[in-house]
Image (tube, rainbow, N blue to C red):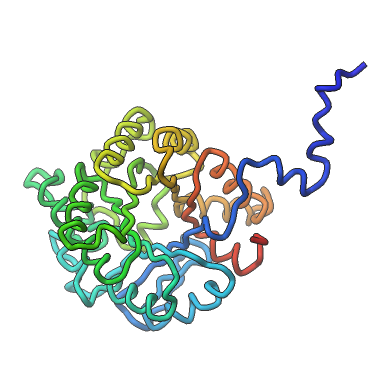
Length: 332
């Protein structure tokens, strides 16, 4: 005779009761859509390695976002893609210039969609002539002091332009403290979220993004400042450090291969939101396999997002956000 306590299937026989088994449900408010903004106002260029994603100029941006906002888009994260010949220099000085694509886009979005939550990626790699995430020493390593000063100034400029959240992805030591102090000095720390890419790992999943943003380094790589793939302990230390420096939210990047780190972040940072970035390589791989008939695109995309939620994330940056909203993959 079967033991009564071993009968489990009745609890998830119905589609609704299966949903009830989850600790949390994916909602539209959890999703953040990454947007690439160029300094060519009329551009709308397909990113070949990032299916169905485009670089857009400011004149194309608002009309693109309008139907998504109507369908429930609550947040975007902006990445600047400067194309002008003089847009890049060794110090990334144009990153927060008043005419930069990010600053102009923040203002345009706020004017059209006052309630849309605007996150801005804060890094210099798109604006440096060498493609690294800060200002360099003579030996090619990052000058932490000067890099943090420049990153903090850029973050403050984005906040003053109207951003709701600044998210430094540069991985320079001490940049959260520098940004927080800059926001305090500017008198706006009380209304700007600082989301730290605390656990950003180096690896091969960023290729499509670097094509989109034109941010590949001109020499070397980023392994000395992005975390090594096996560095779980380093990630935990970085999370704790950034919390101590005043981070309001913690991000893990990439996502699907780092579910243990998301879980660690949820454990270590119990009182702040936990974000993760389903990066360009993850998105592109799912599309490539779906095109080969390995699985259904929607089913796999939603499975990966459910896994991310199960690991402990409460905010998900994903290129699937557009399709989820446009095709009604979520009912809430």
